[in-house]
Amino acid sequence: MEKAIVIGTGPAGLTAAIYLARARLAPLVIEGLLPGGQLTTTTEVENFPGFEKGITGPDLMEVMKAQAARFGARFTRGEVTAVDFEKAPLRLTLDESQPLETATVLIATGASARYLGLPSEQQLIGRGVSSCATCDGAFFRDVPVAVVGGGDSALEEALFLTRFASRVYVIHRRDQLRASKIMSERALAHERIEMVWDSLVVEVKDVEQGQVTGLVLENVKTRQRRELPVTGLFLGIGHVPNTKPFRGQLEMDERGYLITRQTRTRVPGVFAAGDVQDAVYRQAVTAAGSGCMAALEAERYLESLGQ
Ligand code: NAP
Image (cartoon, rainbow, N blue to C red):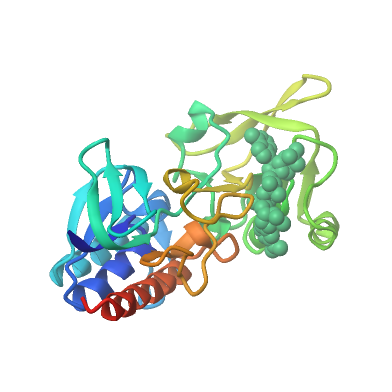
């Protein structure tokens, strides 16, 4: 039986793994479908403390993984398809194989940005298409960009992007915003934000060597299409926490985020860290911080069991 299994290898999972490994618990870390997590879909990370000149997302995750491995974390690939947290030992099924048994589980499966699902959009992720203005906004200085969505996330991204971009188009599929009043007022009043109502992005253009050069928009009322020249497309249509295997086993809010108290779930021995339980901050550094908290909580729990 394992002492600790960490699910997920974003900043939360890997930080938890570093702490657990240094506590001589030799955690087993499960790398899922996107090893390294959301950061591997961004380019330069300039806001993670300790890297004066920035570091790429993939490099940061590689260094964190090496750091965890140096202290004895073990890694395996696979997708957790089911869990049984009804009684000890806790059980996890990985890709339909024999269940793994463990005394503690740290869930750090993160959240995935919701994308439009256009093939052209998928091809240009990291080359003009981004789901994180905080991470990538500074690369769009003095150029026009677009944000899709009409909720708080989209407007927050749009307002942040006005610090850099020459113009920020907010493309929304209706003629009314879903966002809070205060955020809507701020965005509508901003001189560099232009609303594009009743419109869908139907194609992302990349005529110049695989870099976004514009969008094809379709008006949902008139069905008329037009091109909008922009060099960046930011998705602000929400995030989806990766909690499917835990449905019915752990407490979640109405959007599917795990409900935790200082990283503890309601099930003894099951902890959660990072974006899977945080819809508010969603930063690499806050995820790493909560990964550390979850590991310390797991260590204390194991100590209380005398392990
Ligand atoms: P959201 O409120 O669900 O808004 C998603 C937006 O994306 C909606 O305007 C929706 O359009 C649009 N959308 C969804 N799927 C789309 C698609 N396939 N194509 C085009 N547009 C699409 O999500 P959110 O903005 O991420 O906010 C989630 C929660 O976090 C909210 O409760 C929000 O208040 C909160 N939040 C708060 C803050 C803050 O206070 N600072 C910041 C961010 C988020 P429709 O309107 O037509 O449905």
